[in-house]
Image: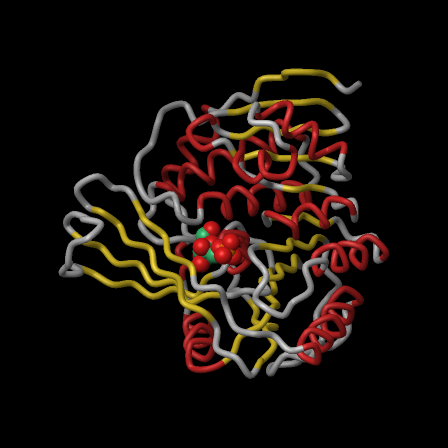
Length: 331
Ligand SMILES: O=P(O)(O)OC[C@@]1(O)O[C@H](CO)[C@@H](O)[C@@H]1O
């Protein structure tokens, strides 16, 4: 089982408009609603790859209910031979789960993203999550509405922004607990939560180049990724948009790119890369294979209109064509 933690879950709305004018009024051509937040997208891709996956985090109010309903009804994993449904271990809170709005401009294919800050989380609610997380790590029954025993996770992913009220060192705390339980832990966040999380020594972090620059002050990706590794991560997988992904690890440094530029909706492409990395870690793949999988999944997500879903045909066609380049051997 793989556990993903999304403290700031979201009901992701995607609007398609013929053309986006910043100060204009628009007729929305199509609306889609998805259970989102980064860890939910990661979970959906892991499930489609055939990994049993459990999601935890907070869900509250009408939007939280809707998110959980959509999650329970989601059958995207069934499109693939080996798929499993994503299992819900979300915890109820008093505040309402946020919405995010992605506006796809059909004339250019570009997406503009608006993310609400998320609900206020009280100290008791955060305490409840910490206790439930500890139980999930130990494979004991958790506190979710649908409590039942689950196996202990083989890996944990901590994903996305923190909602108001959750301590800025939250991820650092969750990383320390996973490490104490000897469970590999991946962190995908930004800003101060990332800075503090790095110091707790996660096994892997997946920042993009902007997030890396924010933490290290370096804009050159290799230098910035090495800087993040020095700050505490065992390995750093930096997503570089069209330039693919760079991994700096104790075993060496590699970069991989998709064989051609793909256009489409990039929302969730980073989450699919996280799913590729995590599934590869659990399956014991070496770094080049893991990197190739992450880049292929990420590109296949750009080609799929909905966040957290990938086009399997594109993925399978791209994977054998991605050849990671060794940039440096281990020091
Ligand atoms: O505010 P965060 O947590 O950083 O990002 C949230 C979010 O934009 O990221 C996902 C795409 O990666 C969306 O499903 C989601 O709503």
